[in-house]
Image (tube, rainbow, N blue to C red; front, side):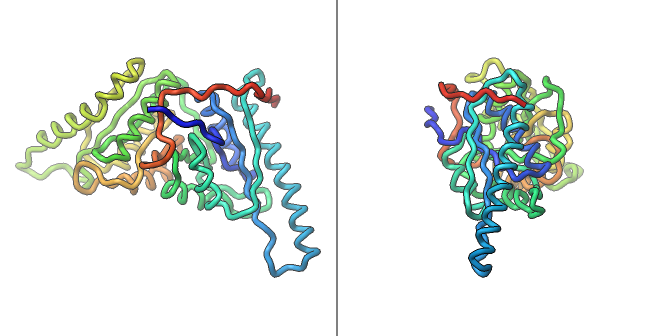
Length: 313
């Protein structure tokens, strides 16, 4: 498939918080891997209507000054993440509106949106926390959710993907293969065939379900293994809750990829709830693939623009 050019490249929300800094570091590295532009977006809440005109001007001036500080800090954070000698095409944008609606709209013009799991900006107001949840439900492109501590795994740690029978899972598999290929690491594909949290009852032929799971993995992975021959794949079929298995396995991964909002091939496997649990429990960077978005993935690399900015930390 051919991926259309995007306006924003990798889009990251910045608010001056520790969580925002972690999101910027991940976004800068992701933009480098994709050879895509990096857009730093800061949303400013308009002054309330009930304050006086003079007070509105004061509030607007203070928030404009804060926006400049936040974006400059984000630029320096991005530069430090990729190294002083690296080239990165960086854009900044300030929008006066509500946060979630802006990011949802902008996601239709981005390859990926990166947000902190939660964040309190330098003005002391909760900003990005609610955004991560809204984006996981409504974004038009993959959404990366990054925790404040920005847990760093070894550079050779694998990419982990949750696999079920849903359309969202299919998109997540493609995305996971692409991420593993860019990072030149192994891909671990995990399928949990039961979500009841217990082992099969006595007399139940659990091998039948294990075989089904293995067949599903083979079917879902075949196309992408052929398209990404450089990616070595480890298949895992397990019994238990998908979220718990992925949380446990994420401790040995550098990135986790899951789908969102679809039912799996077996009853009770709801990957919407799995992505929610992962976003709140794992410290490993998480990418949630949004089904039906306008920006489905492809192998095509975004060309580097001629007006690249050379960032210095």
